[in-house]
Length: 161
Image (cartoon, rainbow, N blue to C red):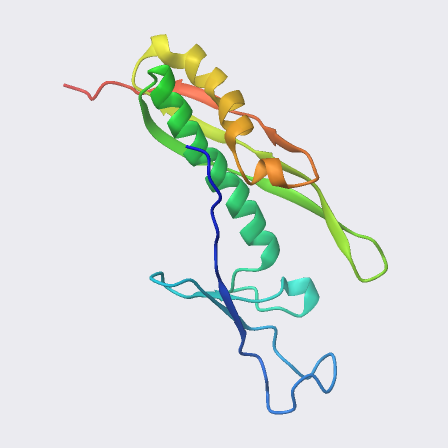
């Protein structure tokens, strides 16, 4: 199905300590992100940028979007290829480089999915499905830096009898 999809999100700054942005150190970077019908997400800047490390930051969210998009695209590719996935975990990482002028950008993201399939005969197709998933991932197709996928596929062990 071809179509256009629109998304809305509310972002509300909650870090005013009473003097607004009167100085760089005078306010919190606390933000509440909200989407109708979903729990609010407490966000902030990353710790090096005076943020609260207990909250999600934009860099975390970008990495999460890439990882989850690949995961969901991969599950769909496996269904189409007849691969039964019984487990999936990713250990994703990204590198952001500051430009020395107050900005920066991501240089790369590496996804390291560890997939467990139901049968040994599915491992080749399970590995190949990562390529299709990467082609389908809306988020990976939208960024201007490399997103590399380094998958490991294993076979589920039968329960001991």
